Image (cartoon, rainbow, N blue to C red; front, top):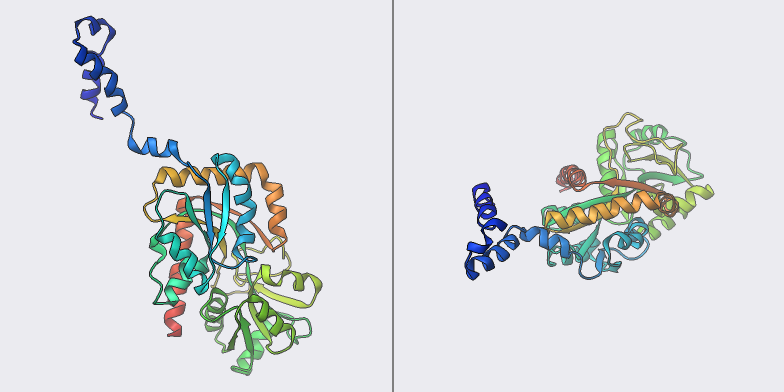
Length: 339
């Protein structure tokens, strides 16, 4: 509101002048304060008016493990329940695509990973959404990606594997959870930087990929830590390096690729995003709920995530948006090199 208008309103409606007013003027004085309340403020106060759903674009046992510990507790600070809704298919494209087309009111969110809203639209031209179709709300957790071999493999370190690969181009067969997925692209980015050539044997999911590695059908796997955590802990698989920026708390003895002298880093942050156009006030309200959830339930959430080799990674909307932009640039370049 213009300050001159406000000053005139205060003068017009001052108690000293009420007796001079006509009934119409008094009605105007009663109505005008409502005009000073912004529509956005009213929208934010009303949110949320119904339960919030977080669409998980993958089958149970993946992204949901990274988000559920937060979602189950965020309702306490939002005044509405927060539920997970599974919509798998097309590598995450079906679920994420449905959220991109949802009403931007904050009640329908997507469980976000670099795979679902970065890699899928970059790699699949039939996907109708892009990273710009979403408003990042918060990063919640970090689940690492790693290079892992069987316990009886002759390579004890990544250097030994790279040295062998240079002398034996394309002799190493490696598996992932699927072609053009995040684990495949990370392996290709690394091998290119290392100056080696591996042969990719894609599987339909992380389970079959690990089974193939354990069965000796391939020599290496690029995999999500959560997918191989039990086998690593049992000693059946040997981790060589993680793609994270820092060593993971669940694997303190496993070096990062950066530590080993490589530039590649693909930290996997899982979070929530809203459809493009969701009001900033609503996004901020959801982020604050996530922040309060982490503050109150840090110990419990950390314990839940540790089961999957993950840890808390809370980023605000702007920082999470920048992370996703960086990942988009990384994978766009990788996909361009494969085509």
